[in-house]
Length: 141
Image 1 (cartoon, rainbow, N blue to C red):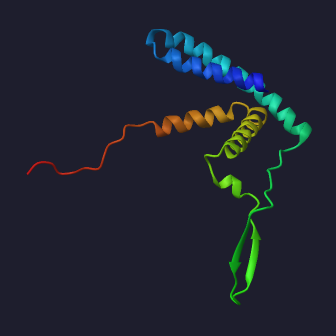
Image 2: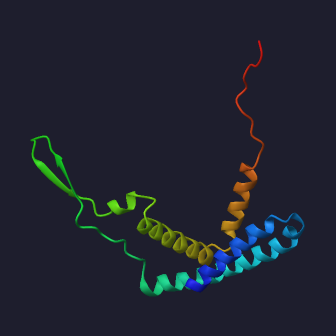
Image 3: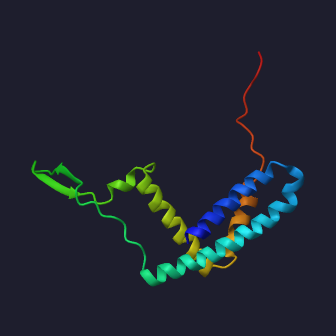
């Protein structure tokens, strides 16, 4: 799994580097994109097999975070906030959890939806890729 991730990241970096040179981009980028697609599919199968064997990963529960609120009778009500650690989107721990969820989602979609995801993505790209104009405004005197 780690090797597949490294290869995927290397291919992504290579795609970005090659796109700088317009002449090479057309031929080499297609080959890299095909390789990236194949690697993602293989990684997805490995990841999905891992999820099926070990089960869906359980999130960490932080028992130490407790919020205290007042009820209508002015009594303290303690509420555990087990997943407060997920509220900081920039923390390393949260990023790892999000990356894991993205990997699992991608693995599921690759193994259970075939090319449907690509078709949906392409349709969205086509429908959302149109010229945009600013709000009309009066200029001059």
